[in-house]
Image (cartoon, rainbow, N blue to C red):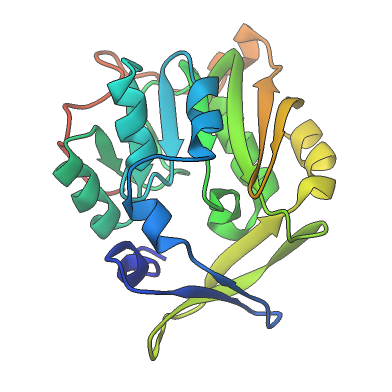
Length: 232
């Protein structure tokens, strides 16, 4: 799905078309703009080093860096990485399921803008995010208020007359959260319920468990600002 969202990220009107027939407009203007409105809740929950998984054009990374928070955006899309570099913010061109810098040492991980759907398996993605964050840190996720539970399947992105090939995707509503969080060793904390819905999940695992299976890299927590690195 490297290029599935490329036209949307480039600014074209687009919608997500699910294999069950459901559709959802992609909020391209919000992605490409500056952080604003309900984004403030996400930003205010990040008080230490933060990794934004599926960062898109980088508006949240930009806002956090402006607040003096050490932040890294991660995205598999070359278009997203190029836009982050254009903003001058730290970004890594990588798959969120591949090896990432300083796993187990980040204070916060963000899964905003529907990114809980990455890979089509929210349980696996939350487990992955929990391994990236330090014990006692948080994974901050955006839920789909229109989804009654958990939907998993395939999706395509439609932009004008163009329809991408299908890719695995998922949508998780508030009712699906307790089971998903518990399975990943996360405890639900603060919620935000507005037009969008967010929840802060605390990582419960021990320090001993945190280091198991992780290869920590030495050196800075983030690459140089605006300097994308190789794709995995």
